[in-house]
Length: 248
Image 1: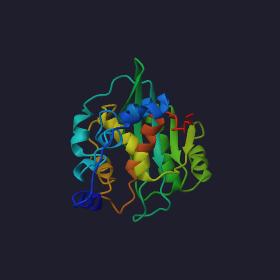
Image 2 (image 1 turned 45 degrees about the vertical axis):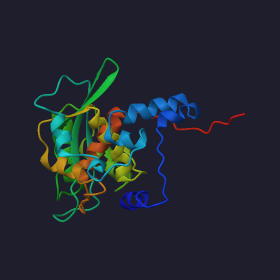
Image 3 (image 1 turned 180 degrees about the horizontal axis):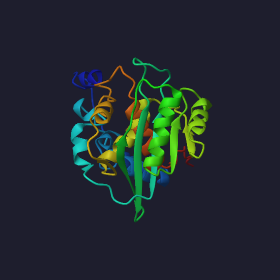
Image 4 (image 1 turned 30 degrees about the horizontal axis):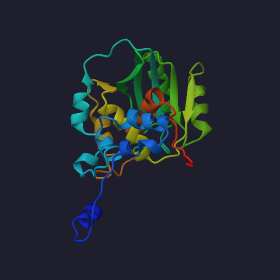
């Protein structure tokens, strides 16, 4: 961004700006609606819809002020609860933690809201240990199912969970996009007020803030990964992709 801003200040450089809406005639109506649903009313929308260049402070996906604006003392009655799991690749005190985040959903009047309920992340446990913690959370929160990322461990992750909790319902997901690409639509939901934190989750909120390109953490953001999977599962539906329209 800095290089682009410097270029814009040079003599002989002309800057033109255009909003997505100005190109509406050449875009599919479903694509336009999807873009508005995702980005309208968010800081990322200023870039994606309004053609602005965001300064560094505005480019952070998550901020503590954002969490404060979406904090509640108590959750309403929920129609769905899941436990999201980001398993570690190894075990021991120096290994990554196992992200365990409990999130609920309320669907009302055509609008879905997510509520972050609990951070049960653990570190240093072997597969049976963290799987046992996940099953305990599933039982304690009367969750609908467990949602586990299988990039680390593959189908072994599901097998361990099923071995520890034979009655558990386990759904798996695989990450094919970068962490930032998966986090961006989730951050937009926070900015739209569609994700609430029921209580304070310091380590989780710190990890989310450190996902930004200007403040990266060297430690794997296990809590943040688990939360992003949970919100994606509960609130983000498949959206239409832009298609080329042939004129003439």
